[in-house]
Image (cartoon, rainbow, N blue to C red):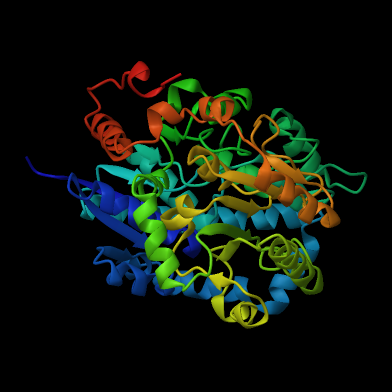
Length: 465
């Protein structure tokens, strides 16, 4: 039987490796093609022998017009004017026209790619972050009746996004809001989260015109996607509570669980390899996951480094019988952090966290979507609450929290000696049904049934509640 063709798009470079990994898992069943608009993606795709299409090679007869308009839009003086005008109705309207034009342009490219390559399905990470390129792809799929699948790769949390835009006049109604903003935000008041909106007003208007506006963009799955994969029944319930249609939700496990489980089932052998590779002094291991405060503009540079040094120093104080490994977030550049190995008795991991986490005895982290990875592996977790207004895991019982900077040593000592029960948390994470070697097959089964539209996806097969 001839393989079906799947088009994949990644909207940020730091998640490209995740989508490449997923594409390899399903490549025996499907032909995989990536569409990209950024040439910095090419080396990683070619390294992994992945077929790709450079979107801009599909320039239409509008090429010259597009170049001229883009040049005007990207002119610094004009950009400044557009940004300063956004608080007024006329500025919002001009931005609406520009964004709509850009979306239309990328829709034409996407339609050409889909038709020329006989694409049967589109896969991407989310239907929340819709810029012009993403909107073009979603609109093309909508018009051409191409099914859309979102594998689970990132845990989206409304509170995290809210804290990033809190009190910004672009995302909430104020006394200074324009008439344009008031009309748009009031129309979509059902989408408000703590009186804030996920999109700026002009973007609401365009996405609605295109027919691809999500009903609840604070989490994935509220748009035109056919299936939004979630990792467990906890996540399933969270999406339903946010208003996502349960018919779109399928519990298929986290894609990261595939390498995580492979390491977990051979963790003793993997631990020996890690100890030998990094020349570790002790068999017991702390893994610290450093957060990207500075890179994500969540803290200034000085605060960022204060947090990192405090975390490492406090951990080493308790590490008499433990070796300390440090994992960097994908957005953190190694060259900025290599000096830490010279300053402290630590080693920075070359491997991705999902490939080595099961070798840890204790995982030290901030509020991170990787916390469930550790819990599902039966690893003790210490969360350091640098992000004071965020608690993503209040429903878990096994986690120990250091709520103040000076509590880290005390809480870590307590956790070292504490007997931890994971039973309650494993139930939340659907551990018995999704932490195994069947995640790939479950995803492939859903993909096949989506492509063969006559086959109805049996909700009971995948929603293992």
